[in-house]
Length: 398
Image 1 (cartoon, rainbow, N blue to C red):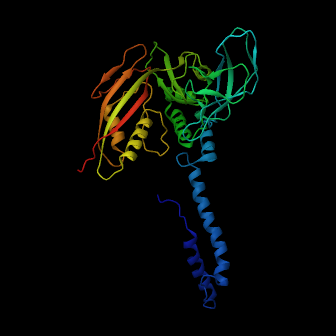
Image 2: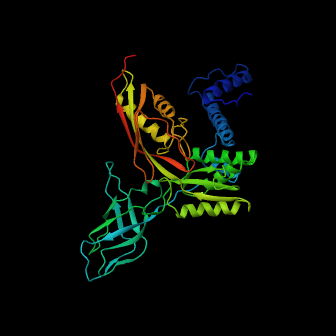
Image 3: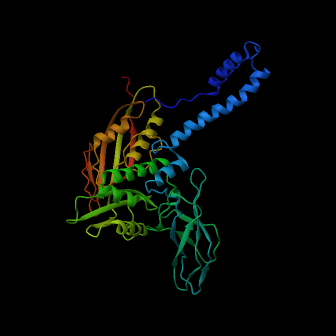
């Protein structure tokens, strides 16, 4: 079946002029650029070309795999999938003083704290959401804050909110401690991810996969970045576990996002099934990768691209270029051949070897394999990329 016929302005004008010439029976012969007749005919020709282009675009927007923007949101909504909006992070910071004093220190609502500026000159600001008091005799007080803007960029690391942009007499320092995030910030859902959820919903309807249903339900919750279903009856007959990740990785036990997912699952599950929203055990993986470039290619560009693609493989970066890299997830084994294939796909790479892999499981000592070996991952584990070192070696002339 051939595609739609699309004519451009350059194609339409000669055809219109030829028809007009035939109809005039030779009485009109000047069709040069700038002539009265040509100018008059070019206007409707331009409109016709735009109608062709609009029709072609409208056809694309009618299908899930080619629609974009608001049209994709409407296509997805037909399958009960709503586009997820951006989320503003909420958390808490600790104000402190060096010496306990016999006076109270009031901290006003909307006091501003921030990170230091990064190398691009960007900082991230947060506002306290309620009045607080550092009481007499105390060294510190924890105060809730909300980010100035939406998105995952405000999910900064512990110990990075260290500047007070609002002067507070009697306060010496501010910081965000570990587990400071209450509600994780998230970016507005991008088209590729919404399209993926739409297709999963279609599979759920057409194939009747119960695991697909629960995965789709978990992904529908704002702030959930990824979800995987263990349908191997992990806790006995009639049980399923749904593992989720938020924008920062595995969420904390008892977190608000876990509770939100559990509520959605409970509302849809049959009474005969025990379905639980769970956070996976994070397995830290530190990699050292050796790359041999081909002669004539810029090693620095290859270094950055290999690093970027491996980050996509571990789910640290997003595949915005449709490179076809399938991220690792909960229960997915780390296969050395897959990592090598991801790096080898970079233009200008001659050879790749995974020099070493250091694996650290909770409560256990790090285990180093050199050269790296395939790593089996249990159903409740998540391979979390720690440090990634890409070493560029001497170029090959082959």
